[in-house]
Image 1 (cartoon, one colour):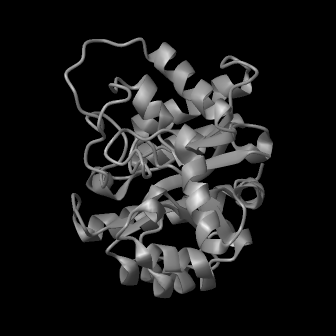
Image 2 (cartoon, rainbow, N blue to C red):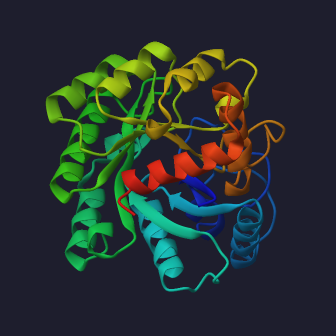
Length: 300
């Protein structure tokens, strides 16, 4: 099956005016304008996208989910995934799918436009259940570390997106940072969708057990390669392989030895190798099992 990057923002980096492989900005920020710095002039984003997909293919990456964080990036994700479905990106390129959601940083803007987009996509038959490329609602959730939106707005936006995921029968992609109690309160009140991913897991074993007990799948990013991430590695150790995904969260959180540079899907094998070391497995086993789990979670 090769590697499956379960969470990337390719559409932000290469289609919405970003600057390509320059140092990543604030790793806590969602994808979108300003996520990658630099004052370079206009770039051929099509060429940059082709390069990123070629490097991913050469690294053994076969599938990528492009994750929306607001109306513009969600539309970009689905448009890019549709090009993949039509074969416009080349027969050797990794296959792409999309999510649509509103990041907690922007929760104060309200979910109306995002939910309208999701419901219109479902009505058009763009969801995976009807042969389309839209596989999940999100990235949505709670972020009290930065608190760019008020907490009550974050909780409300999260609850509304949990509801639409359940109504449309889509998976849910969850962002959680320094907000575990409220996260479980919202999920307890709304009900965890049948398929839910806690992406870029940053907690420790206690939080991992709560997520697993709630029925979620845990997705691990390049953080697992960081020297100060012992708690995350403890969570990896206890997470069953059939509940574990591998992601880049590119262009953020590049794994060692690329830390501090822009991340990209080609680096997902480095994340997988770190997980394999923690688990005492060979990387091929991690690639196979995590890809199978991602396929199941996203309904592929």
